[in-house]
Length: 267
Image: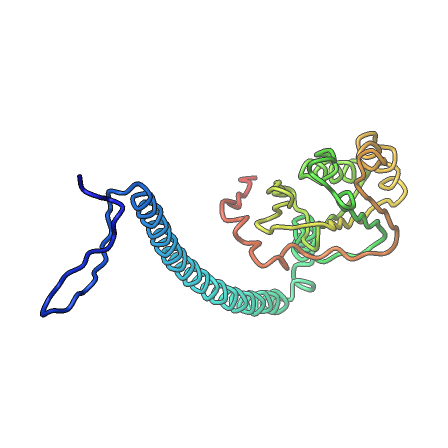
């Protein structure tokens, strides 16, 4: 019977005895050792390949990030250039209106123009009013706090409706004039307003009867609920003389009037 326990053989050559070693792979302990060794080699190779692929993906993501970064920089420069062009055109338009001398020749047209611009929010206006500052609950925790502890688009719209009902004459939200068709939407924890993504604090300016507007907010049941300790939204109201900007100061205001057509009465 073959002795599997012997790993050593002796070979005589040229009068000399040489010993050679061999591995008997049929021995159980050798088979287990080789099996474990193959597993280690396989795992090592898979880790190397995985790391290589991860590095490749990281490089691709970095290149994409750099491309987007360059594109964003280019868009910002283009936006600044367009803003400068808009200001130049607005100045030319104003110069043209001034050159028509409507004040002397057609004062009624000049008055109509001023009223139309005022109603359309195309004029910066100042007057007595209130400033409302809104912030989410301090230290908001989505796992513990109510969803009402965050300010939503409905909250802003509700406040604007209250102010309009109390006689507000001009409104702005975070520096942009409120028009007849405000576009306010929720995007996660932020608010999208005329294509701008805004985050707290939210600041609303309102020109109009101060006491009436203040009372309409302070006596509202919904606002009382969300500003309570249980919910935690923070709201401050300050009275004073304020300035509401013109909607034309919003850089993309013309895109919101592209579908409007001027109609004239036959009478």
